[in-house]
Length: 325
Length: 309
Image 1 (cartoon, rainbow over the protein chains, first blue to last red):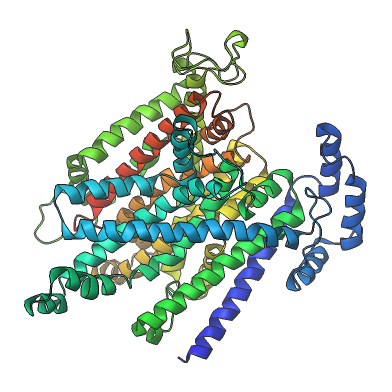
Image 2: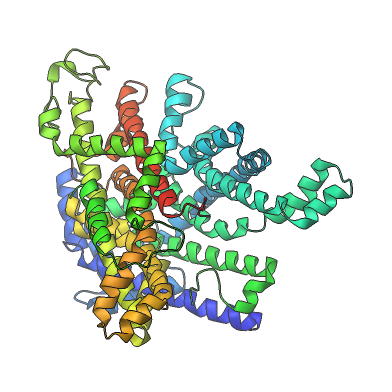
């Protein structure tokens, strides 16, 4: 199967999945009890929040969707906007368009996620190699035990422990907010430990496998220095399988940012998504949800492509890692 | 709907679903008793099982064990530190006993987690068995549906579901259950696909057994090992999901306590009252670890060949 055909197929599937996700989200949110405008009126009366502009919001809603328009038509109107990157104004953050909020908040989340991946790799590769070289020793077991800890705890819990240690006890770092570069440290650290644990486990088992390969034995037999052989021959080849976990890992990271941002009050996409859900800000919720879904699907596609490039066997089978057929 | 009930129920049906081929080189003991004896040798997992059993008992007997009600306020002792008279772990902003709230929070966490995983298991078994066994058009439709759901990031889906259903235990069970059944369904189908080609299934078919009999009596019992492994890892994930949703302000309606909400509250009064964060974070971490170690034990018991991945 040619690469173009493969790409085309995956592209079509991505678009179809995205449409399915949007229909599901839109329909479900329409089913949510209470018409949005009414809810907004009730809330503004009760909590004194957003009292101003509520009427104009209703007007906005009606001018965008029209009064008494059936749900499917509203969906089409929404999608017509979404295709040209126009999700309309948010309700909670009145006077701001959803796409502008996304454009402002996404870089924050992306910075966190990318730095976390980088840090995770920096932690995981040495640890994995170290444990593999000492297979079945006490050091190996202790390292793998630590890895289990990192793996089992969600990133927001790690973040909670970190603010207890670094903010409450040592008083070194701020316990949240987004004012300067020092605010990056805790979230990135918290986000990276989980992925680092997963990666370290993979590096270790992959390293163990490559160390048993004949070319490694041959390189050693030829008298190559152990360090060089391990780094040049074994490590290089054992890093390839890591690409397969990159997809799920990035998805987990994306999930992690939502909760860590909420706990540490970082104005990233995750925080806006959570706030939109809590306040029933429909356009913002739809916009952020679609954006998250798009990012995840594109990431998965890219990961599959990279893996295909690295390992030609997968290309000939003609499926991504998600094709179970 | 408790932890052990769920697992025990599965184990119960398993040990009676006997017509499994006896593997060569093993004694006539069923795979279940072999798995159990392997599990028991896994010290960390066995200890975790005991710990989790205690947690479940505590959750069940919460009104008897908790020193106060979860709403009860002690106005005189707001934000009391741990060890304050009458409040072992201190009180929160409103003067509510933290230990009591942790115990009721445990109830919330376990109810949601077990409820959600039971929902997910039932859905996954139904869809996976149907798709894997019937094949053809049914399989295509079911798996196309599963693929769409697979593309849907599960926490996005859970958030949307809670928004729709409201903030109740039921809503959380449904939201987390539906968000997590997909992986399981794919696993069940894969299992069924391999198992239905086995000779003993063919033998049963040639003897005229009905499709449903084959699916339930012959295929299901042999597919259950891997399914049990994923389920036992899914339980800590569901506990984390419940707390996570609460952290976002989408958990159970206050004042019903949830660990996630307690953690989020604690982080806001970090400097004034760190004990508000320490207690839920530590208990939450221990619970997650214990359930994960049980999962490790279950995995090793069913797959003694070593690391799964």
